View 1 (cartoon, rainbow, N blue to C red):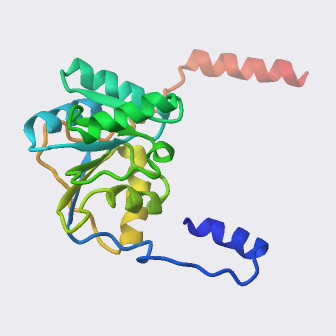
View 2: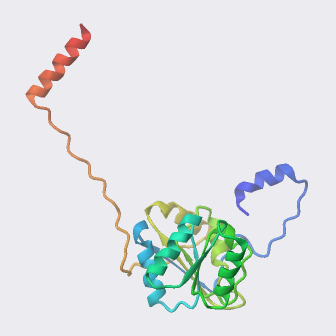
View 3: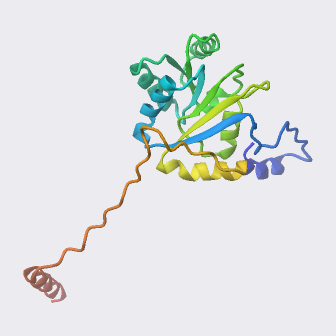
Length: 219
């Protein structure tokens, strides 16, 4: 539960009892965590590349929005990778079918939003991919905790664009460690340079016209 909710809870409840299995900041040691710095427009290319080249049996991909989840599925479909989306905009039947197909290994990739993924329990999930980094660090812990269960290993891959760097910093602060960066990949992040143009020198005529303008205004 996010720390921001603690003051609200304390103002409503009297001497509440909190039950927790492990500290919220702890992550499973058996989960291999990596982060790829990539431009926002190149995320779809990097995702397809990883799904084709890496040994990924099944992948739960997290999107920040419902629209984003549907777009990821369309992009993967164009790359001939079978995927389905699960989010609040889908009917209950569609969500159950997508989850059943994923559990039966008929669908390799399940794309979900955080709300739709609540309560999903998938055995032997090999990979969790954060297509969009969450802006709440605790959410990251919950996401990657869906792999590496029952003593099995797991892999958590995160994509990070320029705007998401503050989110990554917060996640690492909560986890108490740096997430290893994969630098060798085909779509590295290229930081945009702000070009500051040199001041335009005013001509003698321009200065004269400006002076005439101010003289007219003061009359």
